[in-house]
Image (cartoon, rainbow, N blue to C red; front, side, top):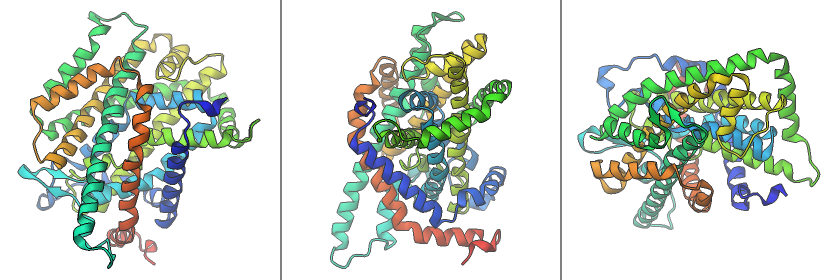
Length: 462
């Protein structure tokens, strides 16, 4: 039975429900801010920041591309395949819904990351839920007369360290091992790539990473992904849309199939919960709302108002899940509708679906996925560096990069399914502190939004 599948556990049901209910409440509390100010968020990407407010390591657009590169890797493509194969087309509905409400969480995460960020040596800025927890105590957010401030401080330090270590594990698994595992999967039926042996691909990736970031300068990482991500995404979406347009007569039919499959009660009466859980959880893997990862990148951006960066971060779930995952899902569903049979759960299904319509697209697909994987590995190294600096107050070194590169190579051969128990154990230590940060600061956050938007839209003010 499908309930016995390895991806379904009671812990995952609880996490999926908590994140979905919280993000839905947040969306209602902030009055659908992700929809009302969607166009404003896009306009901010082209805005200029005055030199007097030039406090940060990277630009606001580079922070967005860093956040996107951490989510739009090959794992993002694999998520769509896993959703459809494991739980059916209905899971895509919940995947998209999780991204829509997740835009609000992403907005709050990035805003708080900017607001509570701290400055280390050499103008290095560090932010995220672990910093927000520490700073919230200083701001007087934890008001309990029965607990001394010293006890609160010790407790928050323990939670912050647990969050940081848990997030570090998740980033290394999803942003490193899983990326290389899926990249190796799409190359497994290939023998050569021009004059390069496919078996040498992991070494190539390691060499590129070391060439780009061996000195640990984060602005170099941001510069790289800001150039790679837009090009790779644009090419991928163009090919997706071309396939969808050619098969436009089946578009509405597949929309109906997705919607009906999301709500139709099946034989045992419980599978709807399974479809919901898989859609929400894999949606979190896709857009990472609820984990607080991208807030680390947005905390390093140069902006005047924290809310400003929150609006920009809000675009991430739209681009990486609503746009890319939705297009990917339709290509795969269109191929399955015409007789294509997926094998396994990996991104290889998406590649074969593209080749079902465009036989020569295998090589361009490999190239696009390699670029996306490389950019994701680079952004993950950015996050690893920030977390290490927060924990140990040290700068990155060549030794750190060598360890990270060894993990890249190991990822090409590791069985990701064996790492799922580790993820189950650490996931609550990431999600619960992050959601607690937002809940504790939500009233002040809403005041910040009102102050920022007063001159833009008075209707937001009570």
